[in-house]
Amino acid sequence: MSVVTRFAPSPTGFLHIGGARTALFNWLYARHTGGTFLLRIEDTDRQRSTQAAVDAIFDGLAWLGLDWDAEPVMQFSRAARHAEVALQLLAEGKAYYCYASPEELEAMRAAQKAAGQPVRYDGRWRDRDASEAPAGVKPVVRLKAPKDGETVLADKVQGEVRIANAQMDDMILLRADGTPTYMLSVVVDDHDMNVTQVIRGDDHLTNTFRQIQLYRACGWEVPDFAHIPLIHGPDGAKLSKRHGALGAEAYRDMGFLPEALRNYLLRLGWGHGDDEIISTEQAIAWFDLEGCGRSPSRFDMAKLTNLNGHYIRVADNARLTALVAPRLAALLGKDLSPAETALLENAMNSLKERAKTLVELAENAAFLFRPRPLALDEKAARQLEGDGAALLRDFSQTLAALQNWRQDDLEEQARLCAEARGLKLGKLAQPLRAALTGSTVSPPIFEVLQLLGREECLGRIADALEAL
Image 1: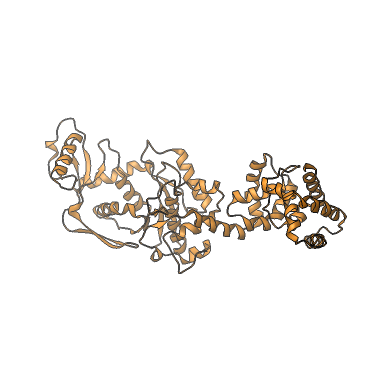
Image 2: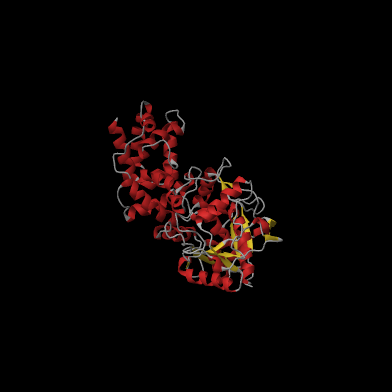
C-alpha cells in the first residue's frame, strides 16, 4: 500500500516553527517512500480561523519548499460528511444521544472533584431511552466507547503505549447544534484521504487513543501513528516567541535561507549519525521514523544562524544577488541599476564569506552603493588621523598612475608604498579601508579596490582627505 502522509494545521495564526517541523517530517517521509504528501486546513473553529492565516500557511510551506501533491482539503467544507458518519454510528447503536444539560454536567464535574475522582462524563445517557429526554434540551451525540480492556497504540516513535478504556469517557461526536467535533472530523478526513501515516507532535498522544476507538467503531483500518516530541526553548521551557516560536515568514524576513531552516528543523528531533549538514537530497534518502528521538528538542537561534552562514557561503551568487537586491534597495532608498546589480554579484564571493544572514549580507554590501561623500563611522574616522592621512595621500598618487587595476598589482603597490616608509601593510590598509568603505570592517580591501574601480576609489579617497 502506498504511503500517504498529511499536514493538518489550524488557520488561527502563522506557520510556527513546530508546525513547520511537523510538515517537514511528513513531507520527507512521503518523499523517502515514494508516497503522497497531503495538506488539510482544519478550519472548523470558525471564530478564530482567518483567510490571512490560511494564506500564511500556504506561503510558509511554499517558501520552505514543502510542496503538496493534491488540492488542499478545507475541513469545514466536509462538515456534512462528518455528521453523516456520526449518524451512521448512531443508527448502528455505536453512538447515542446525550440530553444532559450544561448545568447538569457542571454539577457532575463539581461532585467528582469534591470526591477526588477523575473528571469525566459518567455515561448517564448511555443506556437510557430517548423517551426519557427532558423537554427543550437539544442532545449531543456521543460515541459508545468500550468500558473494559485497553486501547493499545504501537507508536512508531514512542513505542507501545497503553491506556485502560475505563480512563476514557464517551466523547462527543456532534454538538447540540449538529456541528461535528474536531475528534470526529480528523478521523473521518484521515480515513477518506487514505492517510496511512499520522506524524504529529506528542501533545496529540492522548487524542490518539480516542481516535483509535472511533476508527474501530467505524470498522476502518487504523493508520500508523508517530508522535514526535515537542520543541522547547534553550532553557528547557515550552517554546515561546522569546525563544524563536515565530512564523516561517519571520525567519525569511530575518534573512534565513529555506534550506538552512529545513536542515535545522530536521536535526531538531531526528538524527543520522554525527551528520549536521544534511542537504535536502540526503534528507529524503535517509529519513526514517527510527531516527526520531523521544526527548524534547531545544531550539537554539545561534546554531540556526551559524548553519545559515554555511548555506549562504555555498549558495549560488546569482540567487543571493536576487535575494539581497531588494533588501539593499530598502537600505539605500533606491533600486539598484543593472550595473549596480552586476557589481553586487561580482562582489558576492567576498561578501558571503562574512555574513550569516541575508540581512547581514545586505548591510555588508551597502558600502558599494552609497553616494559620495561616504559617511565614516567613528572608528574609521580615527584611522585617518595623523600618519593615516599622509599615507593615504601618497598612495592615491600611486593609484592614479597605476596602469593595471588588478587585485594583485594593487596589493603589491600598497606593500611597496608601506615598506618604503618602514611600515607594515596594515598601516596603509586600514586608512584605505576607512576611506573606501566608511568602516573598519569589509571584504579584503584589495578586492574592494578592484570591485569599485579606479575612478570611484580615487574619488572616495579624495573625499575622505578633503573632509579632514
